Image 1 (cartoon, one colour):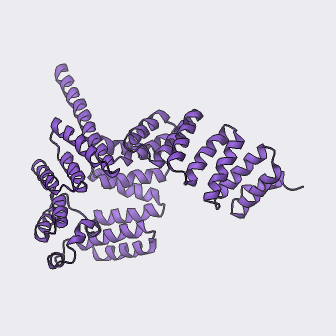
Image 2 (cartoon, helix red, strand yellow):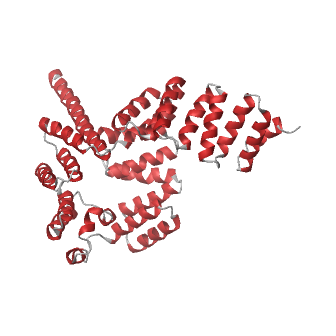
Image 3 (cartoon, helix red, strand yellow):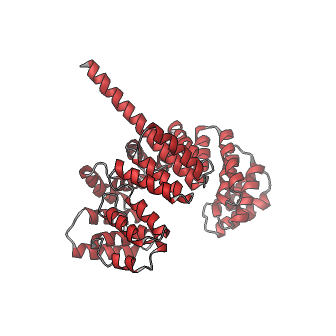
Length: 400
């Protein structure tokens, strides 16, 4: 029995490591492709495929080949993906044949996609520039005369669009109509949860989506929404557990590492947070948000010098971003390096003069540098922009 348990443990650990390696190859290739380094992405995936055949490797390599203008290689990759995982390459095949101007074959593969578990949403298809080549063709117009999506699917798409555009009333109107015309179902519950999340009703979202995840424990869409609700409700531990579940299940989304790192930062688990950020920076070494978060985590851990290193790197990469100046200024502020803090706050205000907190902090720096008149000017500016905290500094330092 002991030998059997040991063997099972070895298989589980090996499977987890293998899964992580697979996801890493896909994420790294995707990052290289986004940077325009298509040849490097293809070389990386060539090596991955030589080790093991995974449909995700082939679909990702196909995307790099398309951007390289090698449609023949991309077609071959999508067909190989289909052999490994049925229908996984159909949407890609539809895109390539559209780019080649072959409307009939493109729509044949698009139909196969719409009838599969890899089915794309209507909005995504309509906004895909690959289909712009054939969108004025009679075959395309004829194809869309068929109702490929249910009324519920279309309403969900509308609600998602309105929420992304900040149009709360419009999304509620669509939901109301959806409820009137359909019995209560999982899609309606999800739609209502989306609207409640946008409205900050986190407890209601958690209650509903927790029930859905019990029915569908591996549903990425539900888990992602639940994690956001827990984050909004300041339950960072619960959110990090869900992000860990998504990462552990092999979801190829690099943003999950940043989301989990932010949770760890807020719970004070700086070592875990930095580990996640390093994974992300390995993929996107110049990402502004990741470098900023890394600096904040280092600062929280007490290593202000390392924090300053991250913030300075960020500024070199993004010299016209006011937030990057604020990050470094705040770090100087903490170490009481007032002149350096004032300089960075000033640079930030040159780029974004409406930030009341920056005026306040610059004023505090000036006050600590003995420049009371200049400090009072900044405190008054901060107050004029709506920062009520500035009034205490004015009353204590500027009224003679």
